[in-house]
Structures are given as C-alpha cells and as structure tokens.
Image (cartoon, rainbow, N blue to C red; front, side):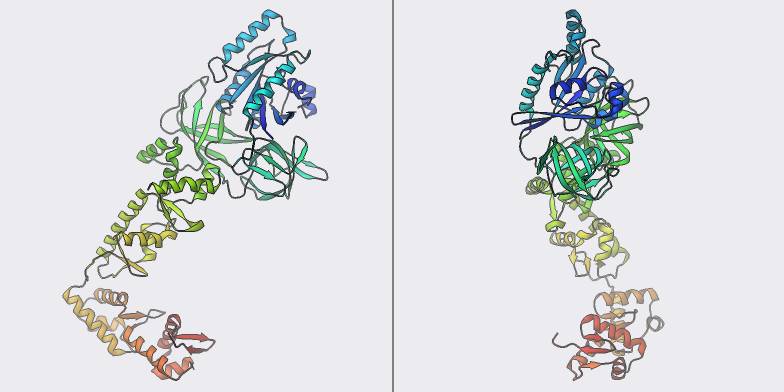
Length: 631
C-alpha cells in the first residue's frame, strides 16, 4: 500500500489542530490541558485514506516553549503542511518551523492560509502576499497556497484533494532494503496488552514476532503485535506510523528518544561530525566550543560543538565536531537540528558525516575533512583510518545504517580496483588499504633492523613480540596474514615461531664461532649432567654476557634445548635419550624408574619428563608415563 507522512508547521494558535480535525475527523489534542488551554503541547497523530493511499499526519505544537516536542515529530515527514492564520500572518514560529523543515530537507510544502472568515478581502490579499514574499527565497517558493476556514468549511475539501494528489506523487510503496529502525515518540501501558510504543518507521520492515534491540543502552525485546492507524497488521514498512506491542520491557524503559532497531546494526556514539548550516538569523559566528542541544529524530541530548576548520558564519555551512553528553544512535546521513539551550533558539541543522569521529590534527585532519562529504571516498578513508587493524564490513555498516551485504558489494568493487585489500576469510575478514600495508612493511623493516642491531646473535624475532611491536594490540589478530604477505614480498623470512630478515649473514665472528663450538661440545660431552652457565663463565676465556649470548644463539639454532624451569641440555643428549626410550621394551615408567635408568636427580628428572610429555615422546597417566611409539 503506498503511504506518506505529512507534518504540520506554523505559529501557535494559527489553527493547525482544528485544520487536521477538519481534514481527517480526528482531534489530535490528547491531553485535557491541551483542550483547556486551546493550544497543542505535545505531538498529535491522525490519518486519512483515499483508495489505496494511506496518509499519516503528525500535528506539532506551535508554541516556542514546546519546540522540542515539535522536533520529535518531524522525522520521516515527506510533505509539510505550513499553516498561517490570515488574521496574523507570518509570525516567529512560522519562520522557525519553516527553517527547521528546510534544514531537515523535507521535499515539499503546501501552505494553508487559515481563519479566512475573520478577515476581509483586502487583509486576505495582504496575508497572501506576505506569505509569498516569506517563501520566495527558500526551497518552498513554488508551494501551492490554499485559503481555508475550519469555521465555515471553505477550502477544506480543496486542501484535502491537493494533499492527496501531492501525496500520491511522493508516496513510498514496497519494502525498504535498510534494516528496521524506529525512534520512539510515545510509550504507554494498555491493560491486558502491556507496553505499547509508537513512532515513524525510518527503515526496513517490522513483523509480528520479530526481535528488536533497543538503545542506546538497552537489550532485546520482541514485537507481540503491530497496528498501523489502529488497524492490526502482520507487518509495517518504512515511512509508516506504527504502534508496536512489546514483550519484556516497561514504558519507562521505552521513553521518547529510545530507538528500536535490528539487532547488531547500530552502536551508540557520543563523538561525531556533521555538516552544519548556520541560520542567517543567528547573531554572530560560531567560534570554538559552544554548548548546544542536539535534536536527532525523537531524541534530544546536551552537547558541545565546534567548527573543525574555520569559524562558522551566519548563513554559511561547515563541518563541525559534536561531543554529546549522552549517547546517540546515529548513522551517516541522519539529520540533526542544533539549538542553543539558553536563550532557547535554533542555530542550524545538517547531516551526520561520521558517527564515530576521533580527533585528528594537522594534515590528518585536513585529509579527513577533504573526504567526509564524498560518499565514494569515505569508505576507503574509514578503512585507512583504522590503521593496521582494518575494518570489517559490519563496522562500516554501523556507520552507514545499512546491512553488511550492502556494504560488501561496495567493498568488493574497491578491492577489484585495488583500493582496498582483504585480510583473513569469512566473517572475520578485515579490510585495509595499500597505504596501510606499505606502512606496515616499513615498520617491519625498521623493527627487524633495530632488533638485529641490538641483538646481533639472535636468529629471529619471535612472532609474538614482532606482532606487538609492528602491529600493536588492535591488529595482532592479523599477524599471521601480515607476516605471510610480507614474506611473499621478500620483506622478511618466516622461521616458524620467529621472523628474520632475508639474506642475513651468520652474525658470529671467527672467535665467537670457536667459542660457540666449544660451548656446544661441552654440553654434548656432559650428556644428561651438563655444566651450569656459571661454570662456563668461570672456565671459558670470555665475558659472562658473551657466553650467555652464545648459549641463546645455540638455543635458537636448536643445538641446545631449554627444559621447563630453565635447565639447559644438549639437543643431541635429549635425542639419544628419546631414541633409547622408544627402542626399549618398556611400555610405562615412573619417575623413580626414569631417575634410576638415567642416573638423574629429581632436579633434572621432572623437567626432562615434562619436556618429553610436551614433545609427545611420553604421555602422562597419573603417576605413570606411557612411552609413545610410531612417531
């Protein structure tokens, strides 16, 4: 069914609510206080249907004190009905409401000149001319203007016919491909039904039985039933006014400003950027940080705002940084209205560019500001900005308010043109840019060169340490992929648990080679009763640190073996013992058997058995070791 949402705008007491009642037969004033005072305080809702066309109507309060309520109802509106009383003409809230409609980029407007029964022909002509001059410089200069009177009924049917005609041209029909997203504007309890919320569905389709997440800080709820304009429905589509009966939540949790959304598609943020247009009526430029109120759909949060590149002049636009004091659920493209909290006034509005902004300086800031407006370039920028850790398509989807599959299509196109590189496979696949890989390549060369300059006898830098020093904590999970790519590019050599520089020569001098051979021979001749490092320091003609360095060198080369606890043996001695066990007729042995067979103290027996367990020569079963053969 094609559907559209219309919203009213205009000054207090210009007849918006009575006009909606004349058009739809529904009184939008729900509170007794509204009826007693004769003004709208909170949002009101009505609807009308014409054939297969469904039109929802949001009536907003016109009084300046309740503008925050009016802003909560303007999300999702495609056609604004601007109401101006003929006996008063254009007033302050007329101007402010229309500026807000322009900032929200509502596509079309229809003007209703009301209370025409209260003025003569001359005053009516003056009012009409004033409205035309008022609209002349903005996007609604060509908006049709109709004269109506709810007291006499004059012009009401013609206005209704025009609204239906324009609604048919603007109506949405069919399922929206975005994930479901519903900013809540009302929540209440109905006896026998539980918690019910209402709002305008911004994206996707909701169905009875569907699970939705709620936030910024919430959980999961289930849709028990759906109504659209008081009629039960199995589903509702983007652009429709919906009432959802929810399970497992209270009306207090579902306050105005909470959003319902497809689980996992949105994340809260407090730091974002937007392109903000400042109203011409603002008395001065915005320079540095200022306190503001940010209105996003039905949510209002206090925040601080500043222009990022230059001062923001009245009537101009610029990219601004926003730090919200409470979290928002925002995506790129969301509309924002920015107001000054005291004295209360509208400063301007715009669209979110980056909902997860982080601070930058100098050239990095300039680069960011140059691409944030460009939909084609922002994907690669966000990926490059993540550094070596890269981004998943899911992380990009959170910024864009879309599904991962939609992002994957764009990213695959970037990959095909060489602008991004895939790392890993499946759901854990992350994307980096060629520039990021080049940075990692340079860091790897620098780190390895510095390591071998300091640790000349080292045969390699452990992968764990290399990942920390080259990639950092966030990218450590991609270490194997990076090292594999860098090895293929000839930047490094993969030595199993360590990496090395290619074509690196044996670092030992002639004297060091002689000394290393002597150390190895002493360990091999001693068998399972090797010398301690302190014995070697005393007996060999070299400084202790050199002997220690050469022992480390022999350990890395596999000529010596370090047992649990730090004891060191010749690799040949351990191998001979392993071969003896495997070729013996023994099936099992105890610690005592092992000590007796090889004449070992407990100090050496336990670490040796643990080493044999770890290498698969023996298998521990309680206090007994089984000898493993067939390896």
